[in-house]
Amino acid sequence: MLSNQRKLKLALLIPAHNEEVVIQATIRRAIKTGQTKRDIYVVSDGSSDKTVKLAKELLGPDHVLAVKHSGKAGAIKKALKRFEICERYTWMHVADADSLFGANYFKVFRRGLDAKHYVAVTGYVQSQPGDWVSKFRVYEYTLAFTLIRRLQALFGVITVMPGPTSCLRTDIIKHLDFTAGSLTEDFDITVQIHRKKLGRIRYVAKAKTYTQDPQNLHDYIEQVSRWYRGFFQGVRAHRLGLRPRRLDAYVIFLIGQTVLYTLELVVWLPLLVILTHRGYDVSIFFVSELVVYFALAAICAQIARRLDILSAFPLFYFLRLLNLYIFIKAFVEVILLKRFSEGLVGWSTTNRRYLMTAELAK
Image 1: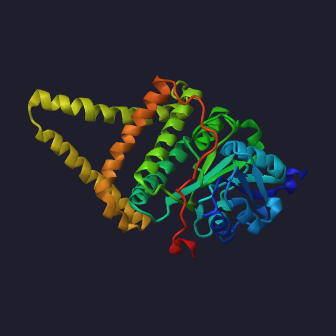
Image 2: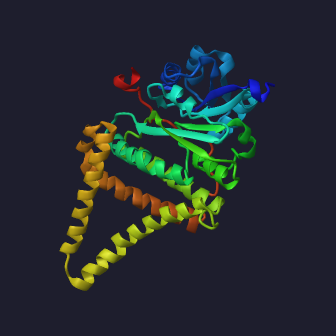
Image 3: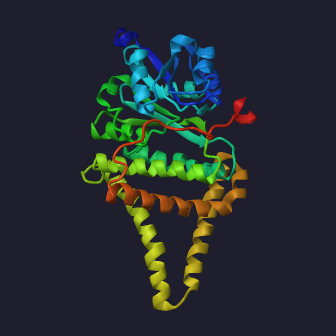
């Protein structure tokens, strides 16, 4: 075992399940953007395709582990032991197998690894170019990571380190439970850092990575449903909102604003029409919302340098309302009906992966 003074700085661990379409591109991109090849590891969680073979072609057999299908968190735990990551490295970066790291990502990311003041670090996530779902995600991610994530970091309430860009100081890993059975392991691990008072989480906005989005409405609904159900699993498991801490206050704010908006749509507006007999008030409300929403989308398009996303704007408002419905549905399922007490074993990427676009592959 190496002493703390002799530990290597950063390991990259890529958990994968049937990722033959993207695994080699992700590994090559990691190397190109500053990660040393000898410090990259892949753990295949029961892959039935060529994921293991393709990963070994680039990294060699000693850096690739195949385990029985048991879930992302379980695969990570086994990889930690097999590769002795905690003993050999100061930091462990976990990235999804479809992560496409931006220019100089790891060079920039390393500069943010301040082991004296932080126990975890996360970067900026953006969508790879795609269809209308990806265009909507460009808007969402740009707003979230340009503004909201900076405010979260400022007040110490980062709620989730997303799968494409999640890094932990290895000495805290022994305090984390990777077998919590959550549908969203990333959210659960992040909340554990807060709940166990392990330390501060840093946001490195200049470390940008691109992720793949669902290619159709069905897969989008499945993904968002998993995210929201996992969120409420964490709320229930960690009793978020019931303690006098900043994270709890922030979670109450998130849920509260959604509840208020829902009441506005389904109770207050209909009641206003019934009491005043002025249906045009509803039209004014929705038109005003669309104007504000379009202005935000235009600003995000400019920031992301993706003006093409505005071509899908008419669908943005539909997806926003769909997200609201899924959020309320997940709240009822998990909090009120006590369903989804445990996460499903493993994860599926069937029909969700596609080759990266040529411009990002450069």
